Length: 310
Length: 245
Image (cartoon, rainbow over all chains, first blue to last red):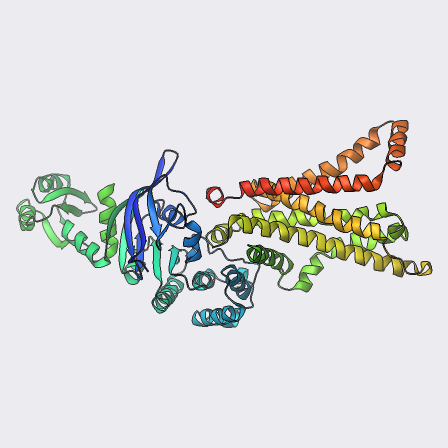
C-alpha cells in the first residue's frame, strides 16, 4: 500500500468560466481521517467527484490508492466507498435490501454478506429495524444506514460528503461517534468534507481548507489553530472607532485593522511584538476590556484562513 | 458483467414489486391491468382468443405500458430520488447499469404479459365450458412470446433514451406514453379517415399477404431497432456526463 491514499498535483476543474477547483496539490496519508473544510460552493463536492473519477479534470493529475483518476477510475471506485451529498438510499426498499443490493454490487459472497450486514447494523443499532422501509426512517437513521453501506465492502478509502449535514445535534454526535469507531476499527482512510469546524476538530487527524476552489491551508487541526492564534488579535472595549483602527493599522505589526460592533479585529504580521498596540490604545483613551490573541478553536482558524483569501 | 447486469435488474424489479412493502400489496396495485387484460378482454373476445391469432394482439399493450413505466422509474427516477450518483460512484460499469435497467424493464413488461395471457386462457376456459380445453395455437404462442419480447425491448431501449433526457419520472412517462400512442394509434386513425373503398382494398391486400414472411421481416426489423436504440442509449449513458446533469 502507498504512503499516500490521495495525491493531487495542480488538479483543476473548470465549468465554463467558473474554476471550481483551482490547481490543487494535496496529499492525504493512508489511514488518516482527513477533513476537507470549506464554505458552501467552495469546490468540496467537485473535488470528491474528481477523485472518484466521476468528473475529468481540466488540468492536473490525481492519484487515488495508487490509481490515476483519468485512466483507472474503475479501480478507484472498486476500492472506495462514498457517502455523497444525498444518502443515495433506495427509500422504497428495506434497510436489509439496500445493503443486500450493494453487497451484490461488490460481489460479496452471500454468507459473508449476511454476516457483514449483521455486524454493521448491530454496531449502528439498526439490526432490529432492518426489515423496515427506509423511507419511513428519520434522517439520522438514514445517514447511519448510508454509512453502513459505504463501509459494507471494507473499502480502503471512504469519501464522506457532509455526513452530518441536516442532522440534529444529538443525531450528529451519535453519527460522529459511530464514524470514528468504525473508521478506526476498519483501518480505513477517510476523506471527509464538512463546513462544521467542531466536527472536523473532533474527527480529523489532518485538515485542509479550501476556498473558491483554491487550497488555503493543510495541516493538523492544532497547527491551524496555532497559526490563527499567532495571526489574529481581538480587542474589546469602549472608544474603539474607525480613527483608532486607522492609527493601529499604521503599526508595523499590523497587516489589517477593522472595527465592528465595538470590537477591533487585527490581522498581525509574523514576529512582531504586539504590546505597543495595547499601549497605543490606552494612550488614545480606549477603555480596554479584553485583549485576545488568536482563536481558541478551529472555527476561528478557518475564518481567518478563509478571510485571508477574500 | 452479467452478474452486474443481473444485480441491477434484481434491484429495479425488487424496488418496483415491493414498493408498497410486500409483494401482495404491489400486486394489488397491478390488479387493474390484470382485470383489463387478463379478465375483461378475454371475456369479451371469448373462444376466438385462442382461435384467431390476431385476437391476442391486445396483450401486446401490456409490455408496452409496463416496460415504459419501469424504465422511466429506473432511470429518471434514480436521478429524481438522488440515488443515481451513489450508484455511479460504485464499481459498476456504465454499461452494466444501463443494460441491467433495460433487462429489468423487459422482464417486468414481458413477464406481466405472459401472466395476463395465461390468466386470459384460464378465464376463457372457465367462461366457455362447452368448448372443451381451449389452448393457444403454437403460432400464437411464438408470436406473442417473441413479439412481446421484442416490443418490450423496443420500449425499454427507446424509453431509456427518453428517460435520460427527462428530469423527472412523470415527464419521462408522459413523453413515452405519447410516443407509444402516436406509433400505435396514428395508423389506426389514418385508416379510419380513408374512403370506404380504399379501406376495403387495404383489407384485401392485408389478407392476401404472406404473413409468415412479414412476421420474420418484422422480427428482424424489431431486433435491429432494439440493438440500434440500445447502442444509442449506451453512448448517452456515461457517468462523466450524467454527473453534470
